[in-house]
Image (tube, rainbow, N blue to C red):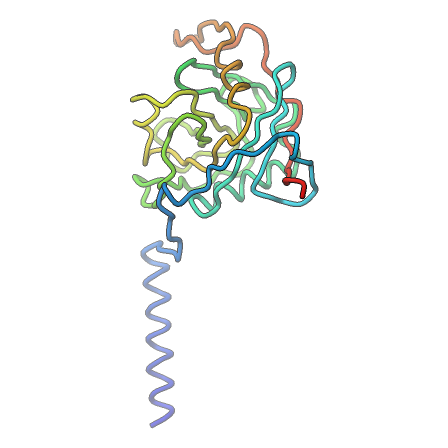
Length: 223
């Protein structure tokens, strides 16, 4: 009798695990937007650390510091990929290659023209791709760029939303938002205001003068 009960429990467990694998489901439960922590920090109180944290500082040459809070509870794979690249100093020396005032500023391309990326591509963690992510695209949101309609082509390129409007909110559920600027939006404002020239497709988005990220490092708030 006992052995039958154990066998039944084992079979049930196997079937449950199989269902999870086949459906692509996980234990991920996204927090509501209102549950996310957007508390600002004092950049002067943020010290660099070798630890992998959820606070990251972008030092943009001639512009200043941008402090980003990462949300692994909203987009775990995206955050893990970003943290890996920060640990490798991947972003050091890269430029903001695409700047669109009142919309967003974009960086993370080692080729500097929007065509490049890192070695690994990740599954898009957003609603239309079957993943619950409730971090909205508002002013200060950090989100992943990708190639056109390929939902799983994000690698290293990301953008920061400059202004909340219909252009930004239209991205909700369609792009993997994973962070938020908690200090330094005035730096983003300054970047968004640089003079730009047209791309080959006619989009006015290439900075006339390079806007370069000096370093990207993990930080923690000093106690």
